[in-house]
Image (cartoon, rainbow, N blue to C red; front, side):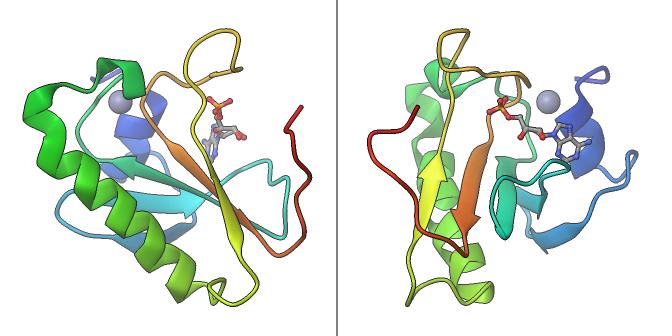
Amino acid sequence: MSDCIFCQIASGKIPSKKVYEDEYLFAFRDINPVAPEHVLVIPKRHIASLDHLEEADEALAGKILLGIKKVANQLGLEESGYRVVNNIGENAGQAVFHIHFHLLGGRPFGWPPG
Ligand code: AMP
Ligand code: ZN
């Protein structure tokens, strides 16, 4: 989608602090970090939200999860732990409608979330 900011980041049209990239995924630092490590992991293909994932996206969904783990390990977070957040729609505070997983680390996180 040409007017989607995360599509443009994934294709390099808008600059970002890239952390990881492969054929299917792109990961970059959040512009407004809420933790010492705050990375967004996205599929390169435009999907509006997790609620828009289809059966045909099963393999991609698996790649996203394994990609998140790969990035977390790359950042050295596996010992201390990390949190993965995916906001879906209005009540959850989704602001960018290209599915993205927040990978947060470097500090403790409370539960339940706000
Ligand atoms: P969400 O509320 O789950 O939709 O999260 C959207 C996230 O995207 C927020 O944490 C923003 O700080 C982040 N964000 C928005 N624009 C950019 C950008 N150009 N580069 C990096 N992160 C961004
Ligand atoms: Zn997009």
